[in-house]
Image 1 (tube, helix red, strand yellow):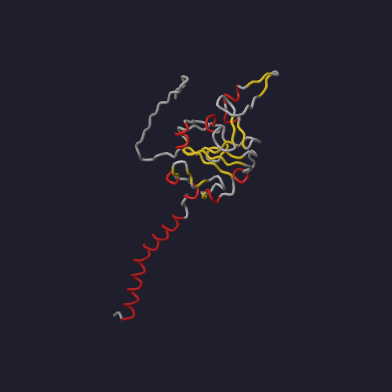
Image 2: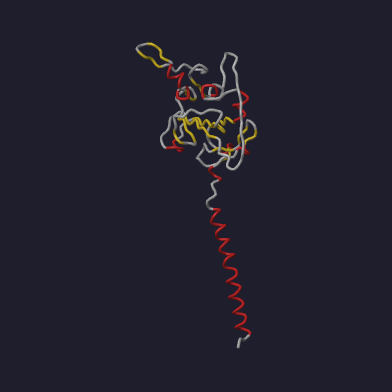
Length: 206
């Protein structure tokens, strides 16, 4: 025969058993929030035309540009489109405190072979023949990992130029700084496409 106290004890135990799955689900939700990677990603929705408001160039964490204590220039996709630039040889001559060699460049970084100037290397890979603040070249990175792959506007979301020593980002780097290429993010589960044709006045085409 159950008493009033035993009935209450039974009901309390039953309520506790019913609440265990709910509490466990809440704990799982809280644990999932720990793995949020938003501090390491930059969204294109945060860019308004030429103006970029956040960057990873300060410390590889998403930081407001106004809070970064370094000289940082962000080249957005709109700047590439409006200037007609497509790569390092056509954009670095238009940005602040940067110079690039090659046919479209604004300084001569000519190597010599057998006592004669040999500009073939500068023309072939102008992204490796550049300098910042007129002093030294910058390290080229892709997603802030050192790379020899030249950036191009067709697959770039933004190009960030961080002028000055940046050993904080990846150990020992070039004293000129970092020129980082952020490639376009994959669009999962969405159908999209883009086709463009460009023709230059001197027979160039793209």
